[in-house]
Length: 65
Image (tube, rainbow, N blue to C red):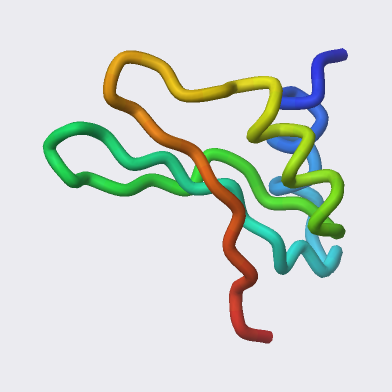
């Protein structure tokens, strides 16, 4: 299972604290959460696996509890 698939699976697990979100921003300015992770390191691995593609940028944000 890829890191992205693992992160998406984790997002759907109820009751698990997943405060680290991977955000994608497209060229038109729209932003989307593409993954949620338990640790910053996990989220950063997702970002690294996705990279920046065709005017889409990815980064990690911590969401308030």
